[in-house]
Length: 164
Image (cartoon, rainbow, N blue to C red; front, side, top):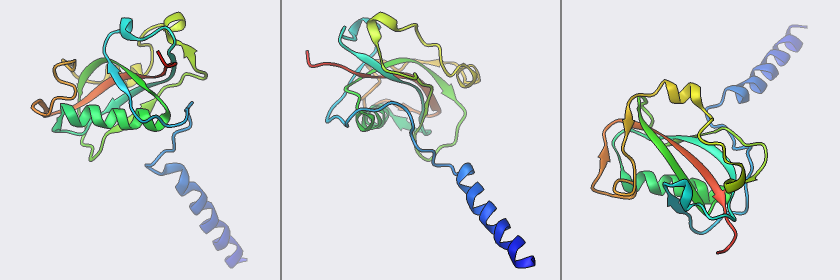
């Protein structure tokens, strides 16, 4: 009887250890990986043919340069099948990460961005706990001369567009 209980206890702890793993698997919508992605900052720069399929918040590691941030989000986007990334606002964030983190907030299905986009309406619990706004735009994103001492929380949408 003791060995049976011990076996079930070990089995239960092995099964539960997977529930608390720090490496969550991406379960959202994805497309075949792309070879390149373009970053845009204005909703008006999203072509009519684009479908939004991932809403996310990216948390950067401390002391990241602009080129490291853009490279990281582009690699993530291309892995998920995005060929365009819309960047929203950015805020300082208190975080001691060793690597960048991506938190996904849906949607449940891909939708035409220009017909259905309702704005930055996801991740408010995380977003509202972050610090002051930070200028992360065309002049900073991708720039190796710009460094951010603190971690950043960045709004983003991954898009899949038809060839135009």
